Length: 278
Image (cartoon, rainbow, N blue to C red; front, side):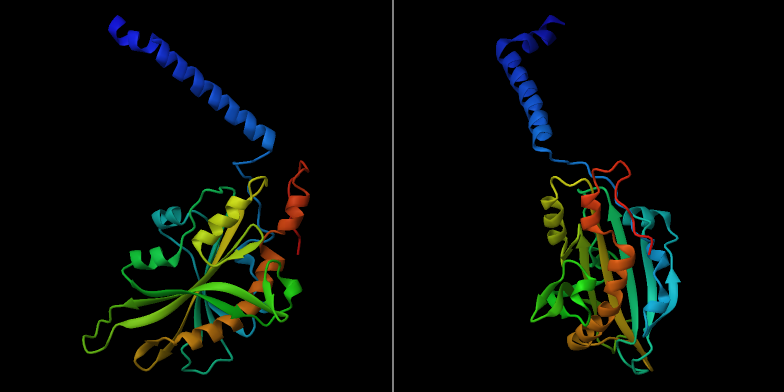
């Protein structure tokens, strides 16, 4: 027993232990003094995503609402605040490759260390191959005052997004592999980001804030022809995306996502952030 204890009562070991204890205490004191908050509180949505007003989505019609039934998949997703809707653009031509849209919106709050899910991983994990990836800019037809955090170019609101092209094996050996586009962007702590890295940067800036959140908006267009599913080229997808997001974004901003400025102004209140009733 003495041989086991002896190394731990030697002077060098005791000095190192004392330094570590002092350093730990100094770190805690420095954090308290600075006011940094590494543990964030959850900030609720103003309204659940499920309550997105379909009547305000015109010219889009909701064809189907899906829910994740697999518990393991839902647990991996990490949130129950999501919608998976199939939309139809009632103004599009019958054979348009962007007539239909798979819309997937998720919301996360509280944990600033959560790693955002991105299609680059989710789609490839489902057996698809990532063919290309690029940052794009969507020029939106909306009032800039409706959405906080958008940049403008000559008065025109712009949104940075990510455009991915995946390929999927076709069951018909005489037909080439199908290629289709997937788009997404994030809103995090009142700012927009077009990548997971961008989200983490925004979250890292929030060192002294009480709350934290991020939301991902992801969508994929498709059409239905005589031979099955059809997909548009980049120009088709970007044009259709600008139309869709011009309708969808103001609804998310004014009726669902938290009012970030109001939350930070009221964070000293015992009741926490006030969710709008609209």
